[in-house]
Length: 254
Ligand code: SF4
Image 1 (cartoon, rainbow, N blue to C red):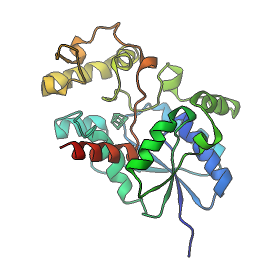
Image 2: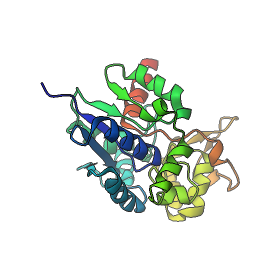
Image 3: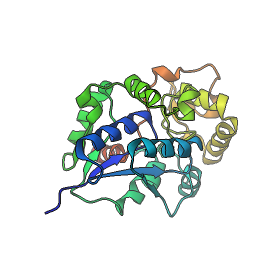
Image 4: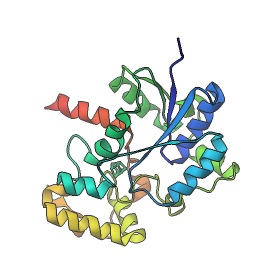
């Protein structure tokens, strides 16, 4: 009987890159598969980072992409919503669904949760108890800063989004981002900011990302440029596992 596959969910982020490297050292190149879900909306520099990491891993990455949607904008415009209580439809359409064909129930999944995210990883395991999940960074006590340092020492230039000051390397213009994150998008990617503001105008106030204390819906048109500090905001969670957990939590609350 063959051993289960070790599937590393590489996201073009620093943490998942180091988690993958550790999994390769533990299990060897034969048993490990590395996947990257290409949403079509991440920074173009991710292609360079992915190629650098493939050289570092000594193994190629399987890129998984939706056949139905070219990018996040195509999902939001077709589905006519950007976020709901069940999460963002782009996660399901661009990450969850395309990966169905690749998955096997016996896979052992390697995720890049860092030492600061131990509680989050614990919750994720509880919500996905039927899956075998490994978090090598937590086991090794590695923080996000450690991962950034390890990559730099490996001679790999960090993805452009980190160099611009973003805390993550997700899609450019993610609805799960906070006020500070969106003001960073306004500064560095004004076209994306304006495109999202226009989409919110088209879809109406229900598409606002935030609700103020007085109950007012805060759309991007109303977001003051000095609101929010990205480094104080919760990090954006957009893994396949998180999406499953979000749906289950929302269904349980209905
Ligand atoms: S990172 Fe954000 S925009 Fe990209 S797929 Fe995930 S939720 Fe959607």
